[in-house]
Length: 550
Image (cartoon, rainbow, N blue to C red; front, side, top):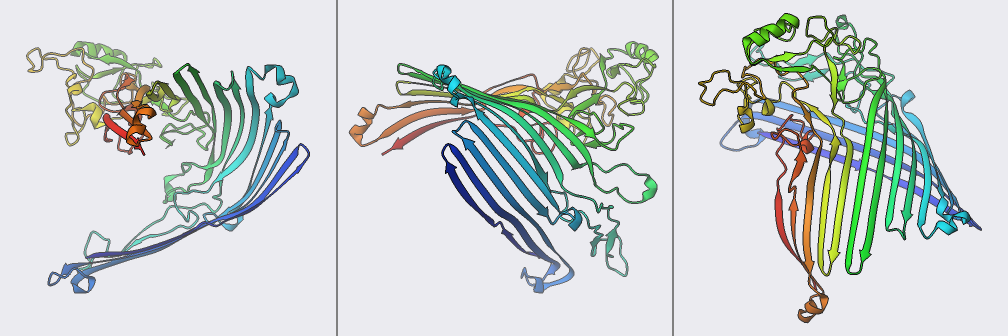
């Protein structure tokens, strides 16, 4: 019998007031306020074995009673203010100031100031723009700078070292009972505080030809300071796990573009809208002076100057078609650091530094042996494209979306990709996996010396190192939706008391343009967290519909 009692209370008061005043063409508005969040939750569970007389309740069980429970709480509070000023709608200025506190930090590190300021210049409102107003009727230049804080931590109480104490948790018996267990907690930092990001941005908005052509462009740079990064490596003699501290700074640079065109020619209306964005992130500071590639966070090696998402891997020469070819390669490039018993059907890796060996050197960015940055997992040039048209009751809409640049490195544990080249408990067998190395001319599946996959070798990861041969191009373009409809003339529908009647057909995920492996979906790389190809695939859906308004 298992019973649970859970209670949660969440309060989120927001109190603010505004004051506006105009003096001629000068307009001003002031706002001040207070905001708070308060979460309290409590849980209690009880479990007991040996149900008696078929009655599933705690008091009708006989043995092995177990109880657990907990009480958790966190609170935030913030005071904020804002001042807005504009003159004739031409010059716009806004200033914000926040003072926020969080219970997730100790008292001395709990509160922080977060200011921001922005300004805009509506150029199209200037007198000198009057002659151009018919062609370019909207033109606004804007800029902003601001700082924000992040108080979300993995633990609600990151400054408390908590012993992992559990009752009846041992795997042995003492006097016929399981003993209680306790585990040494990781170290904590009393200096843990807010993560802070400072962003500046410049942008331009425009509208031309009677607003048929509209758009905006923004360029931004965001520096994040005091991020809680991976714990700094300390000697094993410490005897405990290193504490998380505010030890990482990084910079994100990017831009966003939105542009659209809408027009009508007699009864034909049409529109095109495009959004396109890009950004890259660089690690500015992290205490990894040796630039050890084994220090990993955010899925990438972390050291000063590293690009977030960099993929370090080997360069592939090819698959040895026979033993003589492999022996000739090994005579020039010793691959023993990556495995043994190299034979026909195995990967031949390139000796890029010319030392006669294939390895990762000291596994640092400065001495990486034959490892190189072979790609980057960051999605770049993400886009969305909307097309629509209407003519005499017919309407058509298409929406495309995708990523123009992204790499994906297949890992040795990605069973859905490697097929039979993994341990036998996860080996898979799809049509694509049949393109593996087969030297025997009498093989039932036929000889295959120019295969995509190496020979099948269970529990051998030597051929599955991250490498250029199996680096996937994750760029794609997908038709997410297409809808075709027809609206009957109102003069016809009014005869049977219907104001509007529309029939339509719609299709989702109709086709995708990509060179990514057919064994997975480039749109679902980050979904689920289960790895390559282990997320339920997107479905192609076709639907018919009828919309009636009386």
